[in-house]
Image 1 (cartoon, helix red, strand yellow):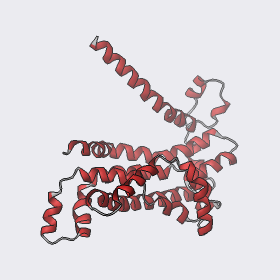
Image 2 (cartoon, one colour):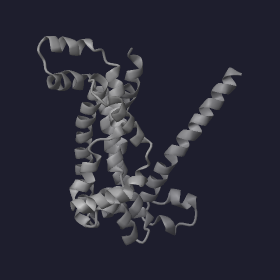
Image 3 (cartoon, one colour):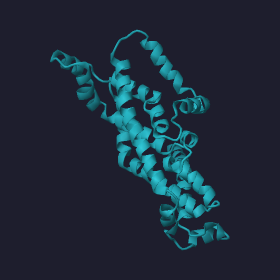
Image 4 (cartoon, helix red, strand yellow):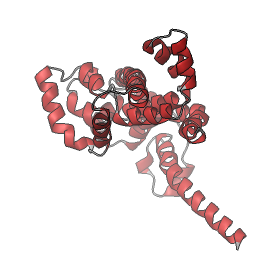
Length: 272
């Protein structure tokens, strides 16, 4: 019976893994074929000659380099802002006592249950009033701090021992020095998780960059790929090549930091 359960469990896991890997494999297969829709069957598509011409064309076409640079700038700045502000706010909620603390933290948790589509029109009107449409301000400033990041860091800091901070206070360290010299280093695992989470979310963001940008010079990569689709008349080979290039940083980050991600998510559970 145990062997049957183990076989069933592994079968389910392999099925789930296959369902997740299949879209990536399909994307790579289409991107490596010069005219994928001209073949008659899947076997012909699979046996067609491999070519990297779609990747070369995607990199040379339109403003692909501008789109990628914009995505990189936005993702890095938003990630830096979230790391700084989420740790500061999370530390305040975890360690400091002030009037209205519980109400403010409850409001942070309340924001988590609000779908982003609900704030789409109010936020767009706000960006119009500020004159930030088609600027980096609209792509960066509204996302410099996230309620999920605040909650994540706050829960992690609560699990940290207070003795180190108390010892620093006895030695004469102020709150800012304690925050940046003690709390920040202790929070490296969760900061890594937060940074990866925010970077990937902003790198893949489409809805709000699509709403807030009108000019080609300010579009991010997901928005640029959407317009690239129309210009190529649904040329799936070139489109999948562009999507593959866009997904490459995400795959590399996961491969390089998967151990850090797991450590960050489980470290808080191992502390008393």
